[in-house]
Length: 169
Length: 383
Image (cartoon, rainbow over all chains, first blue to last red; front, top):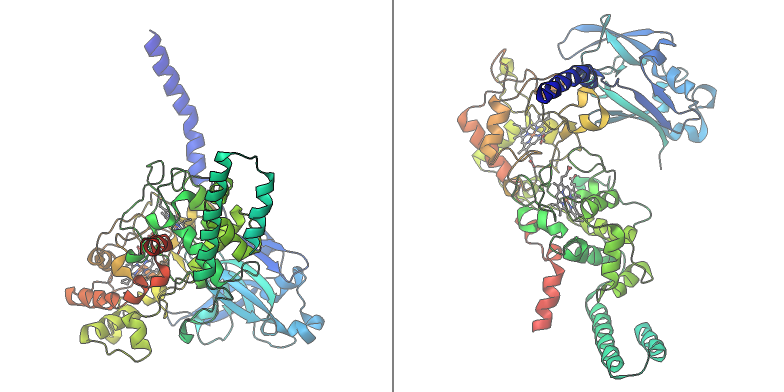
């Protein structure tokens, strides 16, 4: 009698536990990008944050040799939101600042701030979250830098996880 | 000189008696021998790192731990010091042996409690350029890294406070710490700093590959072919055969501080960086380790699953396991048009291994500056 009761209890318990276990497995964290360094407001970028900005598209050829349309937010707009010295402030020693972008695999590339600023260049550099109207592939996204017209794709860094603004030492 | 004045002062404080005389004599001998030993053999001053220009100068030395010759010496003493473990049996060198390029030949290593580590011991080489340590890159500096094996109950299992206390009671150490830090205070911070200083000196830059790069060695036909396969991505439509290893393991140091899922399992037992970030993209993502001295550091991978380089190359050629977090660099790379895996020929596999053999640096594993200094002292004492 006792034994049966025990078994019943365990079965009941395991049923109630299942939703929790499966929840733990599916509760996957969403990727974010931390913006830090020489900023007045450090940012944590996620999908909702990017929606607050005007969306811009850039078309560039991928390794497959075909044109693809990437959409996202102009990088300098995000940096301005963090209080980075762009626009009229980008002069004097601020011209020795750079943006270091890091990917989930540890890969890093840099851009001089002047490369990102509209008063210096018309070339558009965006933080993309979509390609041809669809979210980026897991290996590329959720966020990727797209540099308009740059011949090599090496700075179109994938799986972006962090952006830091620094002075050269 | 200071030691003598101190001894004189302590004489006055001590109670009189036979035991006391013996004690003073003993203390005198210990202090004097420690003092003369230090004065005779330890070089002092800034440590000058020597490495080839093509390694680059992106070296990592924290401002609060400049490298000195005396600091490196103390760190070397500590690296081989079993007193830093709970039962005085293990030192760093138990799992990081010089002759095995600072690995231990085991898949997992037993700690003081005989429980095995959960991952494979890593080669300690060219750490001067490293920024993230461990298989999952969780330690951001060598100083921080060192406290983990010291205090982990399944490794050396002793608090830094207990280690500091033991060293304070061990001849030579108080004087050594004074030589390095200006006073005899011994604490965890000073212990890990000195160990990190020693680790930064573990530079390997004289393998046959290094010699080839500085035009002091002529490649054999197989080594040349192996190097090409290692460096090239396969492009079957252009008739270029490759294994694309350099995409992750490239550069003159064969280490680029990248973290990838190299297709060992579809559902990894150990999630690697994924366990830290909780991100799907990081599941089974691990440090791309250096290939320097790779013939000496078997077994391979974070869990030591492969015993030989043949098994490793077979893995990349035929057994990459698909998963959502598999590195894009390993996806759809093939030497056959439309192929799903590298499909290297048996001869090509041998050639890649011939290239990997070139990465062994015998000057590094025999460098007398990296050996156990405790053995040296006992040796000189015996003479």
